Image (cartoon, one colour):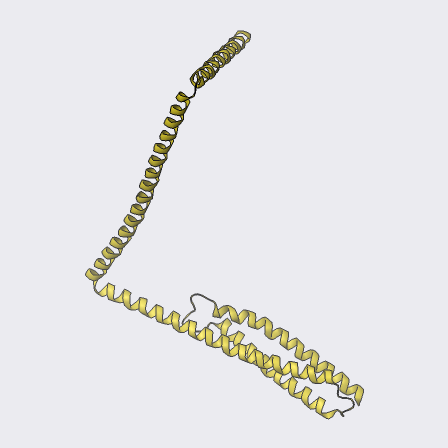
Amino acid sequence: MSISTGNGWAQLRQQTRSLEAQTDTLFHTYSRFASTPNLPPTPTEEETKTESQIQELLEKRETLISQLTRLLDSESLLTASALKQNNLTRHRETLLEHRHTLTRLRSSISTSRQKANLLSSVRSDINAYRNSNPETAEADYMLDERARIDRSHGVADSVLSQAYAVNEQFGVQREMLGNVQRRIVGAAGKVPGINGLIGRIGAKKRRDGIILGGFIAFCMLMFLYFM
């Protein structure tokens, strides 16, 4: 009796865990309908089928949990283990959690569908009104175009303002650099011998430039000669 009871418990638990895994998979599919941007006005065949499958799995799991409960109650206090009690409690909690998840997802999908239908209805009313009043539709179009042009002008004004600000900063920096240069030249003029040193440095640079230019010219002539 104890062996057959143990086998029955193991089989029922295995079936329960399998149905729990199937429920999780279907919840993953069902949750996508809740996050769909534009739901159709009525549930699709896939949505209805998925919800029906989840509901069917929940009912099967409830039946299995009832069988597990009766099986555990039929055991004596000596053979009934705390582990079995914990497993049964866990299956009950998971079933309750999945029922709440189904209710939450069903409500979320319903709310999203109502919003989509309301938005579609408002758009249809606006289009119908514009079709029946072409002058009003044209005026709305002109207003929309004017708003877009105003936004474009605002962007252009912002870019020009930034360009003017940058140009002004460049002018200030040039003036500062000019002042620094004049101060350096003035300070150099007051130091004895500094002008002569600067002149010698300039003459050396000119001499080096002449030498480098002559060398480059010589190389070019040799290149043309051997060609």
